[in-house]
Amino acid sequence: MMTVNGACGKLVMIDYEKLQKTNETVPCRIWIKFNEEKNGRKARANFHNVMRNRNIDSSLTPIEPIIRQINTKSTNFKVERKQFPIVPCEAMTIYKSQGGTYEKVVVNLKKGTTRSELYVACSRSIKASGLYLIGDFVPPKPPEHNDSVAMMFKTRRSERMIKFSLEFPEESQGERLSVIFHNVQSLNKNILDVKSDKTFLSASMINLVETWIKPSDSLEIEGFKVVHRRDCNDIRKPFGQITYLKNHLKYESIAERCEYSGKNHIEYSSIKIDDICIISVYNSPNSPFDVLKRHINEVITASKRFCENIIVVGDFNINLKIKINYKFNEYMKSFGLSLINKLNKNSTNAKTQIDYCFANVNGWKSDYFESLTSFHKPLRIRKHEIDSQLYVDENEQIRTDMPLNLEDLTLVSILFIP
Image 1 (cartoon, rainbow, N blue to C red):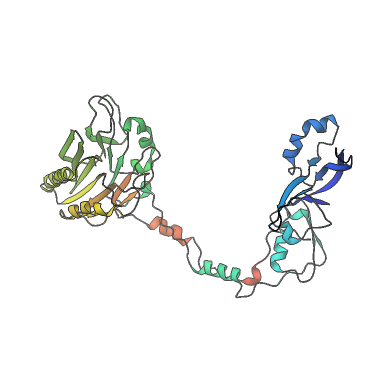
Image 2: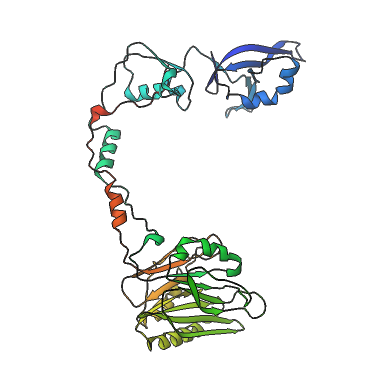
């Protein structure tokens, strides 16, 4: 038997050639019949014409010598070693067999074989019918109680390492109100993605900025009504805003404004639903901070005339990952509004945090999720009243109290030995 890089086979034929300098006849190629057809498939394909012209069995695989250069530190000489990458053998050690799988495996059982060696040896066989044992099979002793693997299994069964805490927006029926805010970067281009996104469709309100839309664009979403829309008048550009609301919800438009002159570009709208005013804002990167403050003060003051509960969400283009920009957070606190997004989370693909949400009402939270179409991540804002009974029930199916009986640990698959 021969092994070629761990693959077993039989040497069938040798090709020879004469060296030009010495006229010596030496082997130049050998032909191996591997035990498994998949081994050597590429080499056989490369020699297909040679094999056909010489009428060589198509199941044989050509193996040519390889050259390895051996560098020595003590001399300036370079040594080249040329040989066939094969090893003649009667059998294979357990350690040599690791990583390989075989159709048929004969395991020579001997005294002193450890549990792990027996597992490695027997599991080299692809199926149980291809495993043959020579000698008496004596089941190995179970692991000691202080065995590291046994202790790991015991720990995994006694401690719940994974907490199942996924939330599915479309199943969160305990929520009274939820809002999606997104810098969509062209709604006309991405309207089909919005219409098919279950997270968007599960929201009570969808607030989109940088819509790039024109009056002629048809942007209806089933189950929603448009309660605010601002279009580009001439050409499409990073401008525009649209707000969708579920058909059954009542609302009141409180305020809206757009300043678009020179480097100043700020848009906002305030819509009252029940006892909450939801303010959405877009502030361009070049707008001065004082201009943004003036508009924020204006819209919050107007909204507080109608209700005390305020939520302000937007693309503010002020990166909260930079400490100097904490002044904006402090400014919002002067209105009694607190940031409800976690700091140092990415809201864009550039790993900045420029989209976020403030609120003066308790029990609300805001998270980011992924967008396949925009540079910005959408925000999902909701009152955190999720009925988690469904997920608790699922948790109960994760068994953590199963006893560990070391005597019951048996070999369930079998590997290869010498």
